[in-house]
Length: 255
Image (cartoon, rainbow, N blue to C red; front, side, top):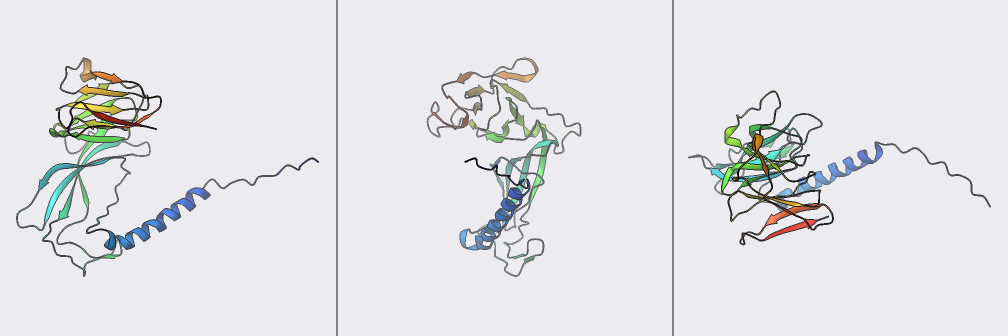
């Protein structure tokens, strides 16, 4: 008995994406509706581009006579083939003394409620040209103005954001203070040593972990080679982290 060939219907390439997007939107609405029962405070703000990384900076400003404090954070962009940036942003967070204002209505979000005079928006203060999307960005604990970033290439970049203008160069040229060499592929893992200043670990898709001392001597054009390259993983090293207390202990995770 010869089976008849089955004619497969051509699949709508947009079907899965449309269904998935609708499910995500519905789940978001359910979550947003229940946020008053889950959290003390929720602030939402739509960025121009997605960010693959976020980290609070340690400095906090408390304006006199205000019911909020100003916090800053590190973000990055993941654009559709447009110029990418390393971002320093600020956000106002209400103090414990701030009063909940149930009468306030946000027409854009269709929501009631607010805390004191907090704007609820993220303000981008500094934009620094970056080579491709910012896979991850982390500040040095001993000197938070120094930020390391992972790029779509094998390079790890070091920026001192105090040495860059608040608005990026229109040319789009990326000018890091140091360019770290040692990897063969991109990655995401990045960790500063909390106990030894300037010691940075990086994990990569090339199965290795690199260690740099960014205070070390650079070669031509601010290039700095890895002090040590750790091998042993047989697949992609997804992340790496220094131990919080032991200066020579670290942990890695592979896929």
